[in-house]
Length: 239
Ligand code: ATP
Image (tube, rainbow, N blue to C red; front, side):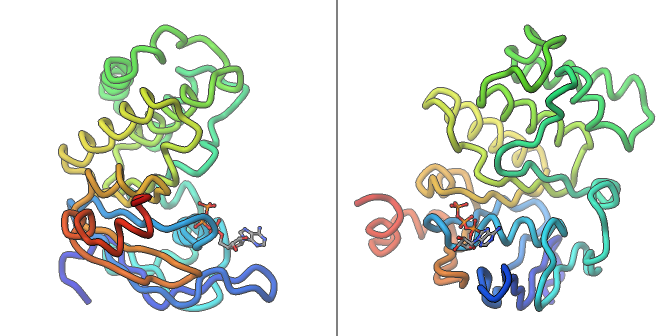
């Protein structure tokens, strides 16, 4: 195993009933890296994310985090271990306010002053959330909920942040903002695994990337190389 791997996925298989959605994939995310998993609709990216965080049972293989299997851990255990996920479709607590959602993200912490400072930092990044701090999360726009889901995940001070399609359904300005924040979070030392259909944007901020196709990894490499690879450009960058 790679000595610096923070996350290691080995021979992962996931099935829905009799249908194999993920057919045995291997990949690693090294400490401090921003790794992206790209690929078209239905390739198995979201299924992979859900299997990593035990939202779906695996039918084969294993997921190692800091060298240890995380197979049996529930959502809060994973957060305690330093792993936070922003799921596709966001999953904010609809009947809680923005501030309450952010506080929930800090559930595992007890440093009141640090929590308050982090909420202010998230408000500085996303002024919109500050303006609406007392609003119920369920009444916010998709883009606002995406910002909140990201903010909530950051409140746990994760070592590894898993992002599933963070740009989905966002306006172009919000897409810019969300990618800017992801790059900034990674630059500050958080390890990131980014699942994206927006391959071009993902490759622009990633260190390395894996391409998924029909449940398998079909290509991998440095993001910069993939951006200039004619095959990748033709298949995933709309050229
Ligand atoms: P997208 O970007 O559209 O989410 P994806 O790469 O994330 O695509 P998955 O959502 O992981 O792909 O889907 C992989 C395959 O598994 C697809 O063929 C999909 O139809 C199938 N699938 C996903 N969820 C279910 C489910 N709950 N029941 C049955 N099949 C499913």
